[in-house]
Image 1 (cartoon, rainbow, N blue to C red):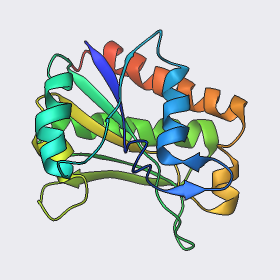
Image 2 (image 1 turned 180 degrees about the vertical axis):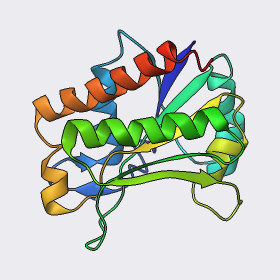
Image 3 (image 1 turned 90 degrees about the vertical axis):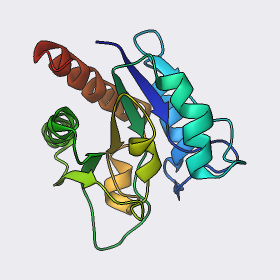
Image 4 (image 1 turned 90 degrees about the horizontal axis):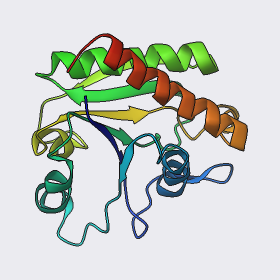
Length: 180
């Protein structure tokens, strides 16, 4: 199996922000930086071509040689929601298994509420192009929402290492289950 990490967002459009953890882009870049000796990390330069065209023209050619893309994100602030979730392409049985396992591992490691695996199937759903336009199995990881107490679980360096360990355990599980 050949996996990679794709950092969601880019420096110019960094995604959600919370004062404890910073932007999605910066946070996930730091998480991935700690894994760079174990797994390839891909970043997006910009979305100047628009989201779908950037995925088709810039991202897909970079991820084509991989079996699995773990796209790192976190959810923006929502005062009534917390927990982890993972998105997958609706036709991907393997993607669904990986998404569910990620949520289970987050619950075991951080006590996160499991919001579960969410299927992406419609062009109107956010993130559709990342699933529809790439050849590998793509699983988009959302470990937490930017809410005060929940975000605080993830802001210290040792917490980022715990999150890296969840990613490592997930990849080990995928390998052990021979999903690819």
